[in-house]
Image (spheres, rainbow, N blue to C red):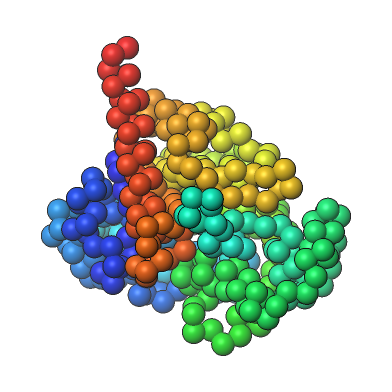
Amino acid sequence: MEKTWRWFGPNDPITLEMLRQIGVEGIVTALHSVPLGQVWSREAIREMREFIESRGLRWSVVESLPVTETIKYGGPDRDLQIEIYKESLRNLGKEGVRTVCYNFMPILDWARTDLEYPNPDGTSNLYFNNAEFAYFDINILQREGARNDYPTDVINRMEAMGRLTPEKEQQLIENIIIKTQGFVSGNFSEADFDPVGKFRDLLKLYEGIDKEHLRANMKYFLEAIMPVCDEYGINMCVHPDDPPKPVLGLPRIVTCDEDIRWLLDAVPDRHNGLTFCAGSLSAGIHNDVCLLAEKYAGRTHFAHFRICQVMPDGDFKESSHLDPRLIEVIRTFSRLNPDVPMRVDHAPLMLGDEKMGYNAGYSFHGRMLALGMISGIMATIDTENQKS
Ligand code: DNO
Ligand code: MN
């Protein structure tokens, strides 16, 4: 497997020189400065590619080329936005960047309630608390009918929390709307004056859009871009939804075995593939991540290695990269798709990472330690394979 690393561009405090020292071979990045919905020009792509190559690395994967909301809800300008998307893909193809990760989650990208959930050893992890999420939905967003979307035990836990302090409420808003995904989806930024109001406006766009409708829009998008992917050999790989279930009244369609089967069969082109994010999939108790790896490794173009532990109450926490399930997933990939680019996904915050200007989940020391662990697992599996 190719060892890659998500790097956030020339302003990232973690430099390409540092990454070479820790065994990274390929870079995963995006043109973060291009506003959502605009073409990625060939010149800008070339500039990024040459910057990476001048440091002895390669641009292996784009993460993400964001799909604008209008394509997801099927707005009047969706065909125009699809043309823009196709133009960016052509430009990437011409520059030889041929693996493109994206997601089809309405409005939000991945969501967490806590970005620094403390571990007994002093490190911290990302955490999803269902009761706090319900609190955000019901009391802060005040979405109509929200209460009916949660099981009684979650509502009871939420009520037991009482009224949160304004600081805690503010933190939930930042964690759920801005910090985890704002910079990825391009929908929100730190500068947003009223993110909750903006979120409510975006929610209106999805009124009446159910799972079937969203699926039809995804199929429409994929069918429209496949000819360009075929021409340039571009592998599209959709990132699973995280958490893998409907949230805030929004449908989600890449959450489980049946969804993955549907999306691969709906557009049965090899270039329509998957980002196998073991972490996102394992956040759903309904998913057997080892079985999914076995089934879908062949249609996977990019692998994200991390794993979640679901608690008895349904909350989940991102946990150790040495989890036996993750070892099994890596074993499966080394057998069924040994050349796939892989990267460490989220990792703990540790050893002063908080002082280094990081994006949530993307710490330096935490990811470096995880890459060390995963490199060890891969080397062990390779040695075993050579012996047998
Ligand atoms: C979560 C991460 C995300 C991912 C985007 C892709 O598991 O991998 O940041 O990159 O959702 O669009
Ligand atoms: Mn991921």
